[in-house]
Image 1 (cartoon, one colour):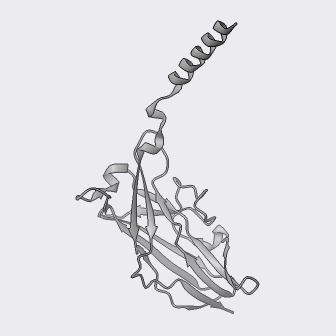
Image 2: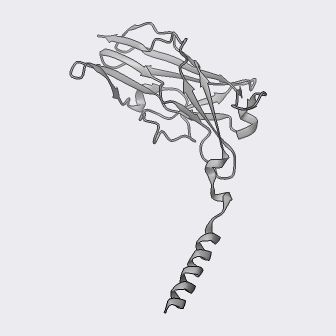
Image 3: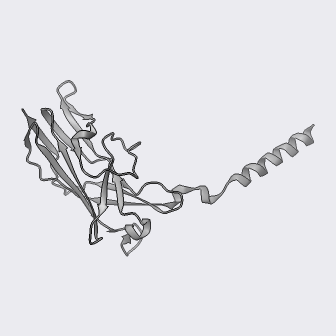
Length: 194
């Protein structure tokens, strides 16, 4: 009986070992980078219901990669003309005396949507937006408009933005974490009046 158990255990071990393959380890195929201060937002600070707030996200296709002296060409690496991302928006609540995350109906978000990106896990539940490689193929640009439909104090939130080429087991993916530098003067708070 002990021999039967030993043979079964040995056979099971071989079966499990045979199922492992480094090719299945997709996350080794993701290059992780970061950018800072890529959001351009000409904040008027006071808006009226019906106005459209606009921001841009721009970054070069050539980015610094930790441990390397040359810049990485993210287009050549990923062969992707699109990076998808999602952003957040918060509204001030008198109940909590703090900004609280709100969802925006997609009909009030203007801009190119990403087909490759899923905001699941990003912490944001607003539309999947796309940063597209521009005509001269030097930088990725996303221009987003938000139609303001209710009053209050608001704040755009870019703290957990990750740009991604999407997930494909056959290609190298690129994920770019967006960081606000300590020197950033980006003011994302604004008020919407009647």
